[in-house]
Length: 292
Image (tube, helix red, strand yellow):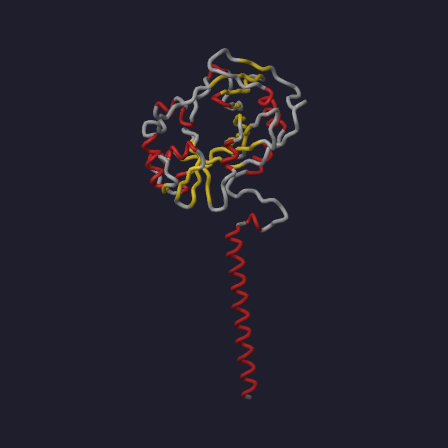
């Protein structure tokens, strides 16, 4: 009887250990999945970024014929030099991409900016309240006739994304692509400063940002809030700076220019703008705001 009892006790202990091991393995697997996120659950298929809403719509937009044609028209238009001068209209083209080198438009990346509430000091110095997703940016896979360009998408009311602008150069997409797991890249558009947020620490990514931090290698998010609040105390929503459209670093397009609110704005270097208006591309020079 004693041997039978010992055997039963041993069996119960073995069963108990196996049960606990199964629970531990299950919990470990659950914890691992929660850390990796759903994007690692199906490695056979490229995942969609969980932090960008309606990302499939953004992919569809940058791969669409309409966006590609807009980029080709932009690349075919010489950027003006100097300031002033008459508005230049470029006729519509039936095959704007014909004859241009082959290129693709890369997958969109998040373009994050500081929020008005963070600048005003009404929002807490927390990543969820300090930074917001405003646009998506996509660069070209190669230079075309010696030029680079960035496609900018804006959220569509009711969901989805649409073409907002094509900008000369690819710095926006290059900086946006520096985001890594556990970090957030954002811009202070008024000074063209790019920063990386690591937990609660703000670090500069370019010279404009270093100047914005007064030459410091890093500051806390709370300290950064004090800096931008001091810089833009007179430029908050509702101020003259805001109502004239300078809050994003450039003046608004005037209504008499003939482009509707839904018309894509093609922004070139040095404040140059190309607007698709009434079936034509209108070339104009835009002013840039000075924050100093």
